[in-house]
Length: 171
Image 1 (cartoon, rainbow, N blue to C red):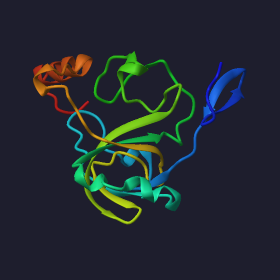
Image 2 (cartoon, helix red, strand yellow):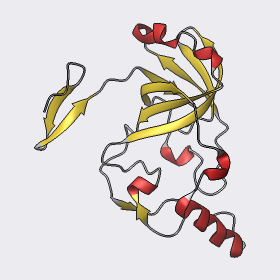
Image 3 (cartoon, rainbow, N blue to C red):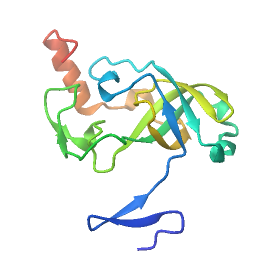
Image 4 (cartoon, one colour):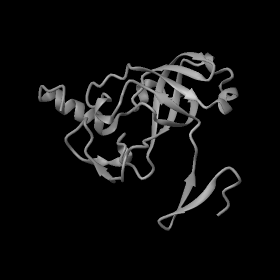
């Protein structure tokens, strides 16, 4: 299989794997996974900074014009994976691809943050849900063409409805 010159194919346990390198690291107030807000009603309002490696600073040109960004990052402290997980937002198991669990075959995270400002190679952001020192793989401007009224929230909406019917707000 041809992969082009940008990726290095590395065999891992007999399987093909891509090698990627971080473009920067996140500075957040969270020192471990337990300190990151999660579960029903979790508010992601914490501020942090994405510190890009100096070699990538030129890639930030014109980023200030966007209010929100996608941050693609690595669950670098997650070990192993499970194809079925019970998330903190429900008491029922779901397929890992229908959740935001860190225990994934490829431990990649995706978070939308608000861009508060830029200081050279540092992006000041709000809405972080990552542990301090988390490696960042990519940054993209948040652009959504999906009207809010057409979004569906799958099992999460059902779990929230059950919780409300039971008079609970937390698991």
